[in-house]
Image (cartoon, rainbow, N blue to C red):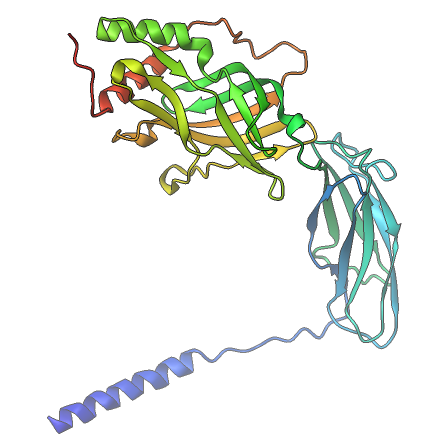
Length: 337
């Protein structure tokens, strides 16, 4: 037994020696000329009404014993999304000094609120080399400038064109109205889905062979100004009087399996909401995730609406199929008399 134990130890230490030998690697140290480059090749600047400034760093691969001075130049893209110097931004100082013995320097760009657009534009910079010392990597820097307005409840109130997509509902477009919510960081949404209320009522009456009364409630959207996002807290959405008072809910919540985080990005400059995920479900349903929606909201500015006027009463078969699926999944089904 003792010999067997010793043999096992011998094999174990032998394996350790082999693994140690395999891990030996050579380290290569750069010993070429000192080259200049941007520390990172891109950045973003949210331009508020205070015309904020943003430092942009350049670096060198090694230090030298004298000061180095570099000029920053603008690379013209000649595209529609190109930011124009003097309109969307200005360079505060286009001369960068890297002191002797150091490897970092910086210049500053100031965003100009009046000129920046909500959609965003791009400015690209490069470094004018001293003696062919511009690195072949990270030798250009692209800055995205986007106008950012502080959250205002008024910016999100009015009439909206809303575009929704859903696996079961398909793609739909609607027209609705928003008002002030219960807090100064909320809005109240009226008319969501109500443009199809008459068709829904007709379908339910046909399904259950009796008069159906239900109410579509306004919903409240909550905003987070610091993160520039919004979401829909879980709340009642459709009250089905015919189903013994059962209520369908709407809300945003995270579900990894569907890749939906329930968070919509907002831009207070023109009251838009993008990629807002929400769900339509019954608390008693086993198919809670059947009705996930992703929506984009744009304030109606007077141009032709997406077209579904408030009086529209048509509902697609896919909507009716989903409604039927949700109704059948509710535990307390209506007993047809």
